[in-house]
Amino acid sequence: EAGVTQFPSHSVIEKGQTVTLRCDPISGHDNLYWYRRVMGKEIKFLLHFVKESKQDESGMPNNRFLAERTGGTYSTLKVQPAELEDSGVYFCASSQLPGQGEETQYFGPGTRLLVL
Amino acid sequence: AQKVTQAQTEISVVEKEDVTLDCVYETRDTTYYLFWYKQPPSGELVFLIRRNSFDEQNEISGRYSWNFQKSTSSFNFTITASQVVDSAVYFCARSNMLTFGGGTRLMVKP
Image (tube, rainbow over all chains, first blue to last red):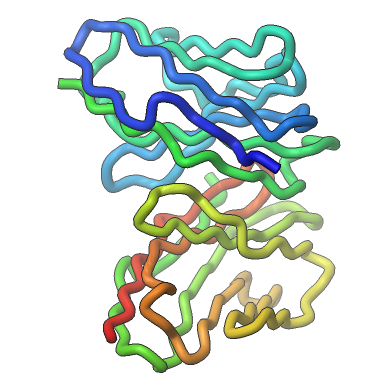
């Protein structure tokens, strides 16, 4: 069974540009989560989808971040315009229901974003 | 905020030594879950264990064991007879929506 995949693995962009990260969850997992780890800090929750609906987006840092999950399959996280402090590793995770945050989440390899 | 603390940022041991990674958490919930993940050099987070707050039995899986002490809000992880392949960053986390500790980098030298 394929695990969670993320694309790209690395991205280097200039401040002010736009970047879109993609996550493909494990097949059949309705829950999809985004997390990020900025340099020297803890891994922090960004948001949670149940199928195509945003269940909790309390961790999204500001309105430069837009996450979508059309059709309830893969998800994209767009950063527009990117700022220097957005640099870090963006992780995606997926899990089966019930999706109350207590079930085991399986993580992808992350996307390393560097904003110059 | 209810934190998860991994006080050891980095540990270095020699192969075959036993090593314990500490994890202390805060929570106001009666029911919660605790997790450990391993992040090898390749970068992905690999799930190791999930425990619920009602089950305080220690768990052993091969060379890995976990000690859950609700009274001290700790969920420590021990690797027995460490190997070079155990070198990684280890994260402790608590539900919900996974609150992570800062991670402990374990280096096992041959």
